[in-house]
Length: 157
Image (tube, rainbow, N blue to C red; front, side, top):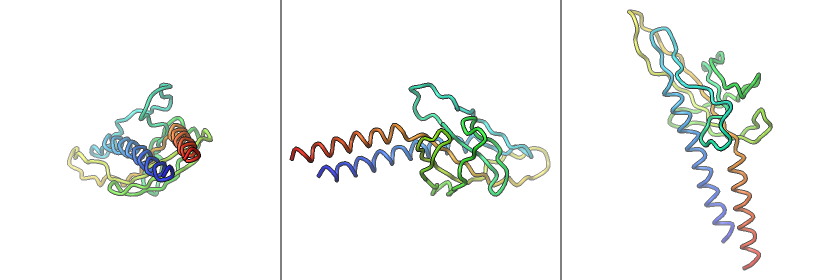
């Protein structure tokens, strides 16, 4: 019974973690627009979050699909995030090692930025890829505590 409870709670915690990642990635994607020939990126780099901050984007990379990186978080330094991309409707979630060496979880999605025509020239907005990653240390700590509790409960049955 402890295993069943553990697996159920683990699935719920991972689902919440992924929902937070997805919300952040969608907010970032929504802050990008093509104005005429200029791509406007309207979000900030939160590479140095407050110690107790939650839902802070630790790592991100925005690139043209099949092309150059347009912006990435300072926390990435000279490294890059994997280009594993899904769609807006079905983003790709995956595990990775962060530049700090910590375990992370990421979401990758591709999208076309919203377009606002400027001047007389029509411009086709580029297909963009965005990968957002967070350290999963707190999640893993919660899962270890839960597993330990489930094993102690099983030993007393």
